[in-house]
Image (cartoon, rainbow, N blue to C red):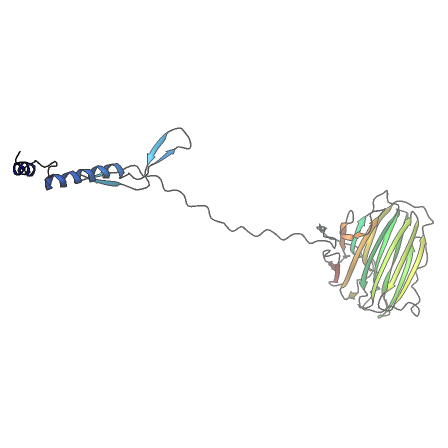
Length: 330
């Protein structure tokens, strides 16, 4: 064969691929894009709610409407709106709680008794249980300055233990006395078992001097039925007086421990004016209970002085084991 003829035939061979028209290619690409949009464009999330009172459910949307644009057309949907959720609960300030009750020296809450008014005693007392075979009561105070006027007799400050039957009362006590004589005042100390010892006498003032403003401590202790010991100490002047006491009469049940300021004019004479009297370090013990704050004593009671006229004294609450007696008027 003629080489030239073969060469001519090779150059005339038909092409293997046809050229795609430009318009057709553009339309195809557009269809692909629309198809992809249809697949990947999602509607907003809808929420299915269930009623709290039944099994019915409803679909809702957090947005009021949404629209899709496909193939040049805009389609909008208006689904039911979900209700607006309530705002989260915030911290609400609470009313401050009431302050705790005042406490005794050992941290035990103190239930304050309501003070009775009447008689010539001012201060606190307790009720001693019938089965008590040992006890003690103690306190400390500063001697009040007393102003004598009219028929006033004076005041005494003391701890004590009382017992006995109606016609056989006894009272073991020790303390200080501001005594009015002819309008003048004198001070002395004393210890006595009332109902057994007579007459009442004070300690010698040259050996056991007592002045207003002196700081004292005192206790009355029953070591066994009938047997008591009183101890009185003038802290300011550095002396102590101790006295054993024995009930020689019929020993009936003990009634009370006392921490008292007393109008020595009793029910017949007005209460003399005195500077405020604070009793501190007030304690008691019963049987083998150990020393405890007087605020914890059984049957704790309080009394303020009043005779035929207006109230004569005011007695404060026991605060940290302390209380104060204030003169009001005669």
